[in-house]
Length: 220
Image (cartoon, rainbow, N blue to C red; front, side):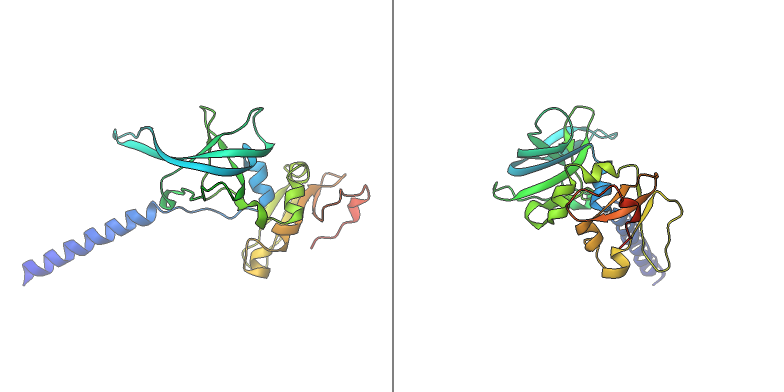
């Protein structure tokens, strides 16, 4: 009986450790406002995905082959990045390690934000802002050309519970989660946090360029 209990205990420990390791490898990201995603990215492009294949990307410290998914893309417009077209993006092979799954029939347009690797390739993860172009608001699309960039010196503070406040004039409080229980609420869809003439930052709504008297703007 003692031997059986010991075996059972050992089995449970092994299963527990396996589950802990599995959880530790899961992808975890802190939600970002589209403006934050734009400012933090090396590359921001609009593109269609036209192909997919698994490729090798060297070896890990144990000598195991590292695999990546290569998506061939057709770039439509670059909003931020190098002075050349991007013809492929790379991602991890599964969502557990933040890999991205995309439609490859060439019919769907995406907005991609991502990082440039040292070899010049573009890498994307689930933590990047990747959205169907059709699903984006008019304000988001317009902000890609100038609005978001003008606010990259500002800091967007995500409010996760009430009360929440800002601690510096260059901060904007992002309240979509507490107000809408969504990170794709009105502030993400229709607002950008941009610099005022006095160096402070404030939310600005709409497509039209802000007026010079923007100092009197009200936060949402």
